[in-house]
Length: 592
Image (cartoon, rainbow, N blue to C red; front, side, top):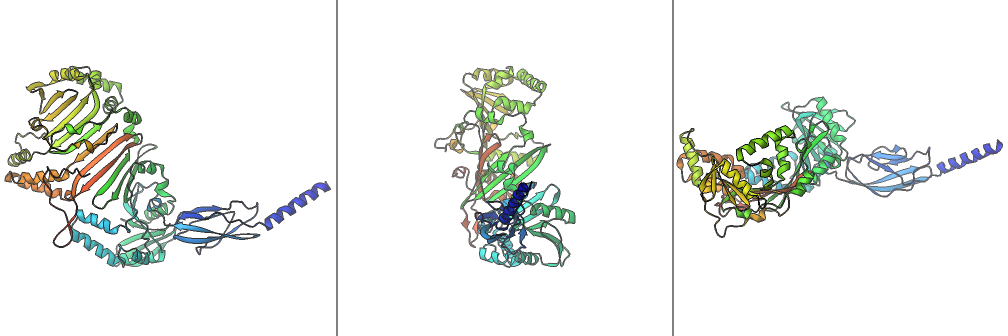
């Protein structure tokens, strides 16, 4: 017994000696984001019962405990000290500006992030000036600079008023607070940012609301307008819309507790992976059914002479139910050949799909519904439906034309008599690729459902059909009598990547606007209608062409949207001006 007591006494003495002499060993330098709670621990944990004293190095009170849990609010380099019974160790913590996507809470209903708005302020205002009067844009920028007390295009002046020129701006909405949006602005100095907001909104009264999330304020202008904002996590959070204290606190606390925000959200990361643009990022997510969230991202990059936007969307699970997207992408053959079309096309559409899976998706999952639909088509066409469905590859191309004379005639007749008997069918040509050896099946269907009109064409209503080897052509009346593809016309097949499952759209915006203007000179009676159409489409003037192409992937649709702009040209006053739209033949937007 005595020996046991001596053993316990020795062990206790050794333990106390170890605790009394524990000297912390500094961990490796850390890199963290401003405003995000971070946990720092030693590589070698202290003995049980030893409390360490941590000094974050940013002026906040020291903490005690085996680990440090802290959020550094401002970017910079801090020397953190950790003290134990046997001595002190220090190590650096590099605090980086917090990216705006990390400041947006993961459960936000929608968000728009412009990460580099201050560094590319002139580029953004130049882009906006392409779609709005340059004088209005200049006036807005001038007034913004006056209210801020700094030039928003000069980083050094922004830093002087507390705004972080290295960080961006975000706009956030929440399901629980649909009547308002939060504006997030990265800040370097909270006190200076507070003074900037008071000056920006001319706040006469300012009241602080106590909250554990950070500093929250409600201010009033001399006219009695209320403005609410808070400072947390390296960001100024400004709320727009009617303010109630409960909604204000809920939204602010969500922003203050965002942590890694959207960048840590699986739904965002999955959709973001399909949209690699970085200058403008738009995100929306909604619950489409219990436990299933649909998310979409549109991202855009600024370029010197064009706006390039990359489009990606994870399709809502409710829409994809029962559709094998992975099998769809693998089963579809190469895209159709757009070079088959005659020239002067204003828009192209190319689709590649699996016919059986697409029929199942549209006809419904019920076998009864599918059978009724299939029987109705078989009776009308005189061909068993499975045979008809199996005769097409799933490749479909379409071309839309604009005939200035025909368009002017339709508008004129409608203006003279709203009940005029005009053909409203747009000039469109569709080509459906057939599987080899299945042409006779299509011939039987045409003989049953249409009437012959010569030259191999069959007519059913306003549409004409013709089988040209392994291609079924479907055209409207106007295209039926168009000339063949002119010699020397550009081959449009390069617009669509040669990959299985490719979907594509191409629109010649400049050519369409030029056609509308050309039609004004032919039929003065319809000029009013055409003028209204042109005025409504004025915002499209800077755009030369649009192109969207993508592929079906398990997450949804991955692809690219490109907007090709007219090059800016200075006018007499020196401000950017958009050149007049060129004729259809010279402005087909092929410089993609």
